[in-house]
Length: 180
Image (cartoon, rainbow, N blue to C red; front, side, top):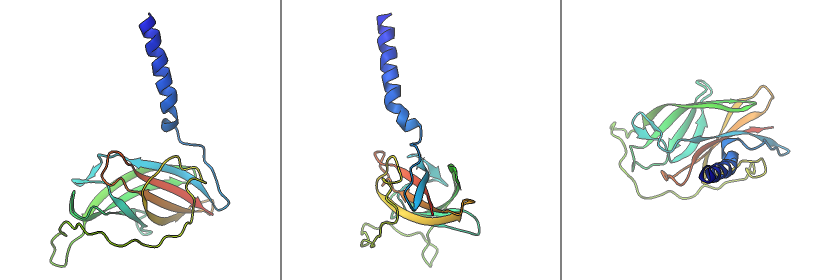
């Protein structure tokens, strides 16, 4: 009986410790934007036989409504590629994310690019939204950003992507922000 009680107390303590991770943080706002929600891409997700990771760029295709994510893999884990994804964002938040396909970048002769171990120089960046200020619970290594559709509220979706560097210790995360 005593062992059962101790196990129940430990289980309850673990639940209290893990509960914040299971529920989204309360939405916070700044004068110019509010957090719509986040989505963590599963670390072992594969699309068309390629590992999804290294997402460092994002763009929105208004014709199809898809978001396009470029992997900065440099052909180490799979050939250089980009992904299409249906990211369902409403004024209530990120409702669903489905990666619908992977496409390989090809050279003029039709072959894929070889692995490259030289990185490009940094790009100048300007702060548009402070993720801490709007209540993003956790993120690291943010690399990609794209404007998305207009919401019925008149706000514009800004989708941000963080890169996990193919590491199980980091997250590939999509962050949807409503910008006024």
